Amino acid sequence: MCVFLVDSELFRETPVQRLVAALLARLCQPQVLPSLNLDCPLPGLTSFPDLYASFLDHFEAVSFGDHLFGALVLLPLQRRFNVTLRLALFGEHVGVLRALGLPLTQLPVPLECYTEPAEDSLALLQLYFRALVTGVLRPHWCPVLYTVVVAHVNSFIFSQDPKSSDEVKAARRSMLQKTWLLADEGLRQHLLHYKLPNSSLPEGFELYSQLPRLRQQYLQTLPTEVLQNGGFKT
Image (cartoon, rainbow, N blue to C red; front, top):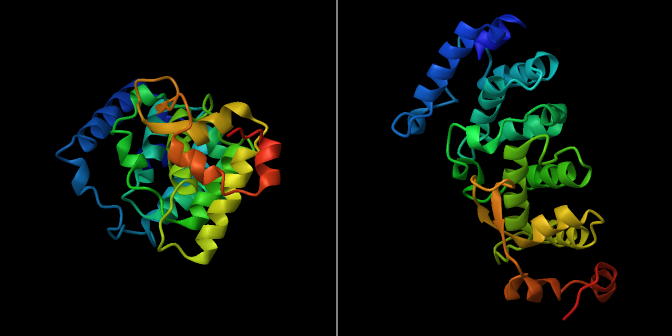
């Protein structure tokens, strides 16, 4: 990351690109990746999130969508790492999403590292949903995170965890209603019919051809006027 931060042009040099790509490949090997710890103290810095915030600023300013740069932006966003890093991107640095065009086929770690387990931060889920419905996050701009966000929002809106707080239940119901009423038919289809991640597909995930029965039944609990406006048929 410091190689990219030290100069706005250095990372474009072919020898530098090759060396950093080799280091990233080494870091992402299955036997190495689990030991990556982003909570270690860093000399001269308060915390890794501070370094990551600077990294996001720099990516937005000088990257021009460089895929290697993008791969390093994505690496700390894995589900097992601190939610603060994901909140930083979707809360304060959403402009990054337009340039983060790394193809799913070039993601150096399994897609499941980002989609499992289901996200449990309500604040982040609300930011995810806002990014989708406002068009800030689009599949042709940011294919990896579009896939990840659709997976987590789908899991959230159809979750029926009885232990959820009233705040979470209300947010889930509101999000489901807004999803059902989306004018963007493609996004609506993705959020309602999402099945599982599959990086070999152009969208990055599989869809149910028909809405599963349990999801239909859950949708039927929405107010009648919402269902009618969304064209629900029983």
